[in-house]
Image (cartoon, rainbow, N blue to C red; front, top):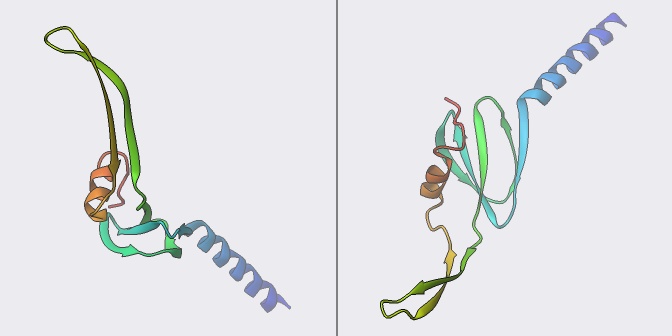
Length: 113
């Protein structure tokens, strides 16, 4: 009976240790995951659920959908005093996920070194 109790306590300690050190993330169909190990980009992950160690690895989901940006009407006076209203609209889509991730992560996202 004491052996069973020791095994149960050891299993509980291992389970608690893994629960605090292991995390999971779900990458959806419209996303790709970028996996960083100790601050170094290792690979690109497709849709699915991934488990990783919190201390070493970070998985950052990256959205592949297009983003629409609209700047409302700005009135500008021409040289002869006529008001001209200008509206701008743009559609943004990232072609290189790795370069975009480095640009967007550089100041806002901590790397694990």
